[in-house]
Image (cartoon, rainbow, N blue to C red; front, side):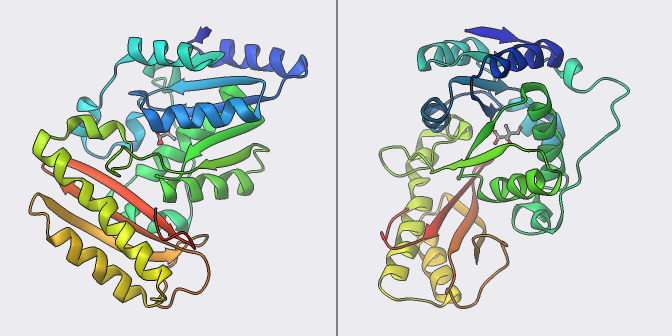
Length: 285
Ligand code: PAF
């Protein structure tokens, strides 16, 4: 497995691979790799001949400095996990290689970033679109894979790649859940043991919403009320928002007619978790 820390070295290797006729996939991450990331790698290995994982904790997308400072950075474990998973190259640039003191160009997302997570995390999606553009520029892949847990991020990245003609196929990979249903996240390790037990309420609430939909409920208000009442049963949880939106435009819906998704964010102590469920015909998330 190759390790690159500068965009030029990364790009040269990727160009060589593509010149050699290989299809190149990239899995952008901020490290602290878990089962969700490994599912992205697995999906990449199935679709490409060469797989690059990027590992970079992107200061631009954190609006709380203590969240950035406390973000886990187990780089040795991450490199071993990549090696074991069959990754061909890791791109782990330094902060200086990504954002020099002269850095001044940003990618501004449009209205998809104005709702849900957007107002609660000012500047977050601008940080994501900027870094993803840089990571795609350094890795020059045929395709890039992102988890559906960050549903809004995925929608914004798809829009950006189309709007800016970046010519990269974007693949969304379904959420990986821990055995009790909690969505895999790098933040889960920061939950206290009691909060970790209580956090299962998020996926339980989404599953209840999915079952209600399957049983014929089409009112977004009723689906949201189901989520709220279930989360209220867990005193350790503090629900920040729940929304039912169109799966493409992310506009709130009142009646669920086209493909829709229920999204939520909640706090357990100082750990913020997000989760979502596409309302479909299987009754679970
Ligand atoms: O989803 C993430 O881990 C990050 O937002 C990403 C896409 C790697 C950009 O830093």
